[in-house]
Length: 366
Image 1: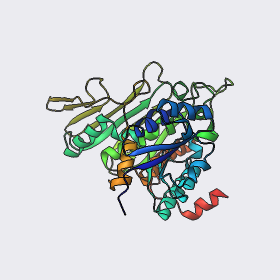
Image 2: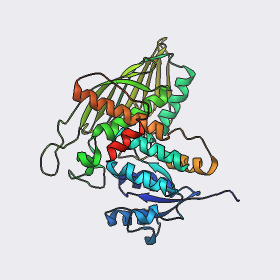
Image 3: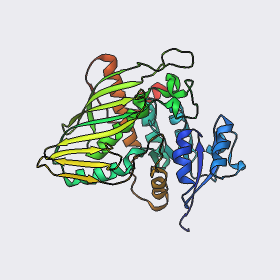
């Protein structure tokens, strides 16, 4: 049998992440073809296919038209968080590989079911951990592995901007991001989860414990009432190797966003995203300063290719290593869950990095 040279994609959800990441990058990949797009708001799907010259026939009328299409090899799930598990599991069972947006699910039970389904169906499940492939983070991983600042002792990482109502397709306070039944969590799931997978990826160790203060300070919904999810989170995290640090997420950084990480090591300090000109800055305790021009970090105002859809295609066609599998997504979600539980209980909470038992997931589904 001839080796497959093209991956045919269906995209579920035509919101901003599909526009600026998945469709934008897949449409430029010669080894990928977008053959179907569905969004419950048809105009969004029509806008996406028009923007990338895909043809009107690519817009389909239902989820089923993508999931049951035997000609589709892989599905991108770019929907509200509450739909991730349901659609991912359905697509996997229908014989599709899946690239799912983060956070991968709204509970650890759902996430575990997604992972088990992918294994049972012998299909690839990848999570859209796009921050890992930002140029400053790629360089940082290399330098940290080389030990340029010695052993890491502590870190500080922040991801904040003015809120999803300014960036999402909803363009207003009625956005699904503000509704607990659709989003599960707010800025902690939208932005904090990025750091919950990035820090373990860069340091090659998982989170072990969390202590967090999470709340809603400013955001209002379309009725002028406080949103039902968080708009700010400040968390203290401990890693399995003993490293400790502060992880902050916010939807109220008005005027200027912040996507910055600092590592403090035995030989010096490394700053990521602190300078427009130098994506990685190293300050050694002997006084030496080393600054690297490595490329820009993506922002809502300035999009940069994430590399995730291209990596997914390479995994499917070439068997390339997939560093952002379902288990990585599960552990990132587990860190978010631990932070939320810590805030609710006022206690330090252990991060559950092992799949919850399947019988517990079945009980949840009843």
